[in-house]
Amino acid sequence: MIINPWHLNPTRFEITRISTPITGIYILVSRKHTLKVLIPQARIEQRLDELAEEISTRYHDRPLTLLGVMTGSLLFLADLMKRLRVPHQVGVIQASSYPGNATTPGELKCNLEFLPPLRQRDVLLIDDILDTGQTLQALVGQLELHQPASLRTAVLLWKRERTRTTLQPDFLGFPIDDHFVVGYGLDYDDNYRHLTDIHLVEFTPAPPPR
View 1: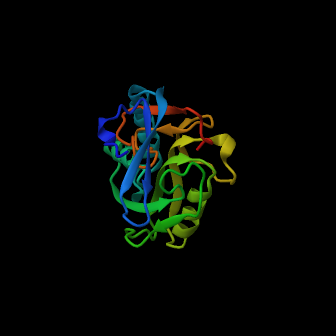
View 2: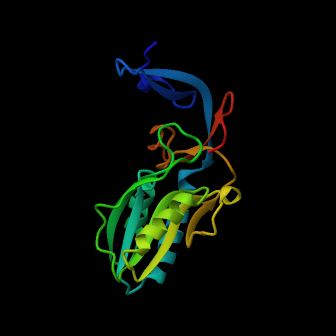
View 3: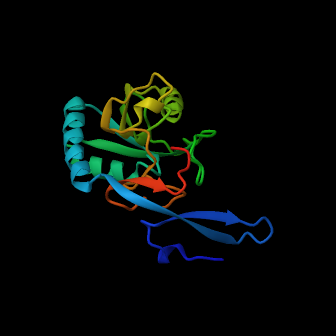
C-alpha cells in the first residue's frame, strides 16, 4: 500500500519509509501516534530573547562566529542570530548520529569541509539537543584543531539523564526529561521539523526513547 504522507494527519500517524532493494520504490507505512505540546512557541520565543541577551553580553566586542549543526539546529540558529546585538559570522556543519528513523545514536558522520575561518575567533557551536553528548564532544574536539580563541556550546534542549560525557552546554534553552520530541527543527525520519512548538511524541506501541 503506497500512502501519500501529506494526506495524513501528523498528530495521528508516524511515517516510516521502506525501500525495496530491486525497485527502490518507497513504501510508506503508517502507525498511530499522538503529538502533545511540550514547549509552546511563545515560551520558545521568550527563552530565545533571554539567550540572545546572555550571548550578546558575553561576546560584546568579540569576533564571534556561530556554527549551527545541521539540520536540527536550523530554526534555533536562524531565530537566535536575528536577536543578537553583536556582529557575528555564521557557518554550518552537517553532522548526525541519528540516521533516518533511528531512535538511538549510531556512528557520527560529519562534514567540516565548508567551515568558515575559525582561527582566533570566538566560536559558538549551536545544536538542537544534547542527548548522550557524544556528537557535541566529537565536534568540539575537531573544531579545537582550528585554533579558535574560544569555543563554547549552545543547545536548545538537554536530556541530562542521558548524557554520558562531561560536556555541559554553556548556553541552554530547556532541560527536558528523556522524551522523544519533534518540532522546531527536531525530526523523526525528517518529518515534523516545521512545527512551531516542541512536541512530545507518544507512539502506540512506544518505541525506545530517543
